[in-house]
Amino acid sequence: MTVYGLNYRSEARQPEPRWRRLLPLVRLEFGTLFRSKWGIVAFLFCLISALVRLVAMLVQMGILDFGPGRRGSRLNNVSRGPSELAQFDPWQVDFYLEPVLQPGEGLVPMLILTALVTARAIAKDRTTFALELYWTRGITPGGYCFAKWVGSFLLVALATAGASTVLWLTGVFIAEDWSFLTTTIGFAPRAIAALLVFAAMLTGLCILCSAIAGSANLAAICWCLLLMVSSAVGQIVANFAGNEALAARCSLWEAAAVVARHVAGVAPRRSDLGGALVLLGVVGLVLGLLARRRLRLQEALT
Image (cartoon, rainbow, N blue to C red; front, side, top):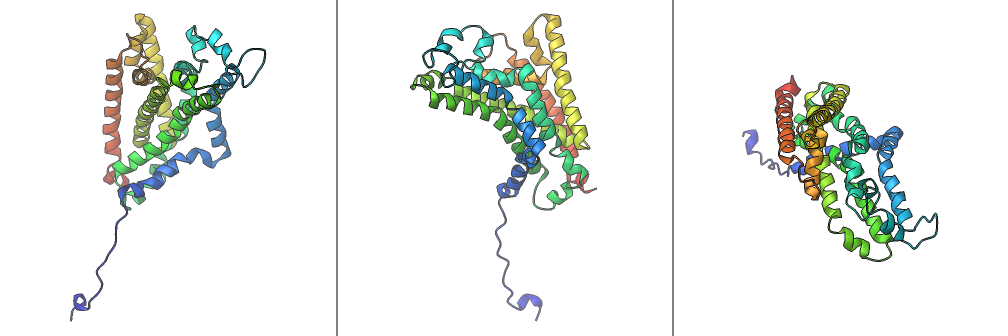
């Protein structure tokens, strides 16, 4: 009698669904920055702008009172004017949107988060030969890259869209009545969605840089150079041509910001949405093709 005739029980197993295999990667990437005290300090530093606006909101709504005046009345009297003041006015969309999209205020926090987490996500696994382990455990290169992007995107979104969401909800609950909610409900959710789109675009490009680079430090350097050099070139071109809209055709930051402002419904009429989409699409396509070549099974197993 052969071994097949001894009535062995048939194997009955249910393979883990793909999302459960990828979820640990998402959690691992999201929590990268919180595993050390310096990482926590870096994350809190990225929230300084949100904390400043929280204080401004508390002052303007009378929670922090530095002088006489009816609660909530100061803002209505003094801050519905120039755009500089609009960024400190909880009743206007700039309060939630521009601190992230303005390069002078949002570029440094974005560089810190993406350089410390997103740009190192895949490159660090390549240097430690961890890719071979992932490929042999039912995780495809595409799923691996997607999980790494989701984890880093959630971290960046927490510091951008998450902070703006907390500011908005704080204003809703500390306001005297529901007038704040009825005034802001028309634009605040769209502004938060725009920040999610903004974070998704930049982290997507950054994760592709990480997939291409041979080391974590090289990936972080290349990403910072790509973002900063393109921003500088965009500003030079815009100043030379006398048209600020042209910056979106050269600067990845400005291109992503233009798309985000269109999602929020506050983009200027002359904003170059087509040029921004073309730039992001071309750069994403080039990086994607290079990343696909670098993430082939043969690349990791040889």
